[in-house]
Length: 590
Image (cartoon, rainbow, N blue to C red; front, top):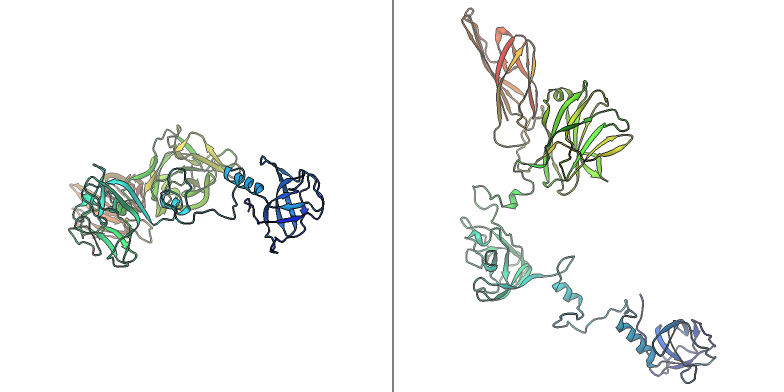
């Protein structure tokens, strides 16, 4: 630390023990004691050398014992230069006079030389009435500064306007319509719901100036230490007993002692008050983080082109592709992508993962994974398809993440194609492809067709451990009805488009003709992976019938047509028939 203020000693007169020349920056004194025999403290001094001769010179230097170092010569105009500017003989007088000291003090005050960083300046007490350009203390700055890491006890808004007569200590709210502060009332939602709350720091008449404490510690009396305090049904009052329905429970503060109330205004109605009803959509305590309104988060849903995925793992080829996105929600449970016609005969599986970002590319670590078998992939129709993960993914809104698509094969002649928008269309991300030679390469101006599906902690986990079928988006009941022909072992896929795994598939067969009649109806319980069939077969000539069966959704007895569900997910249901011929009607419910 630089010591810039000079030490002073009264009536000091000693001498040099050796001559010095012009430019010398060191010298030695004859003694290191003052006139009373006290050793001079080490430090920076201002001396006058040869003050009684024509060689008179003012110097500033460091003193340790009798040794002088870092000597600077000071002119009568206060200009400093390194070393002595004059020759001084052995025995030259060395005294302390006022000029060198005054010159250095002047330099401190004008800014030419800084103050000593090791000796902080301060007032002898707390200064009163600091204004304008006056020096401020640390405590004063902390009491008025905003922003940054600040230690403070109370945040108070001054020069506010009272909407009615207020007494110091009244709980108040800010009415935006007139820009004034009014008393709260736990019976009246407009006085505490979706408004700013505070406490009157001063007593004021209606329309007069008032100070409002909005955060921190409010000093009062009569509190019960450790108790929570709520808005009371008496206007402006607070209470340690939460009001009961039909009034509202609104936490206002916590008593740190009998005189200190820590203001923690809740600024909304009690989220858990009462036993029935639906919380308001504006109630962020229940409806913002960790919940879902069933909507999508990030989207780019224009498709006018496609990109290959699963080509040979070689330079310039697209063995993997990835689309980046920046979520605004903190949970997603899946994505929607766009399938286009395969190239050649694709025989592999398709894996979709969500990965974090590392240096502008996928991290390589999957946060969630979905692998689609070849049978399912071939069964999907071209166009949008859903991808749900077995559990939701917690994301950080504002961070970059990647949807990564890859296959188990690496064959340029036999690969899949994913829908894209050749004009980009998504402002917060980009498309990249990967092979082991090139690494991740940006595809300029192109984005995948994609949707990220907003998740929510409030969803019910329903599923079957054996089938691992979990309907992840608990929305209103969805269904698809239709009919499909199944002839002699046919396998037919229905693209239901419901966007979640069905919970039940029902199917019917009915035939009536002069010599032969048949009827069968059955249910496939997806969650429990079980067939529950009620059916019979009747033939006028033989009068035969079959009872229920548990190995198919439709069974036609003598016709031997057993219809089973061979594939099912959030996109498709595949019916497989045994021998025989029929057309069945179906209802797919999710």
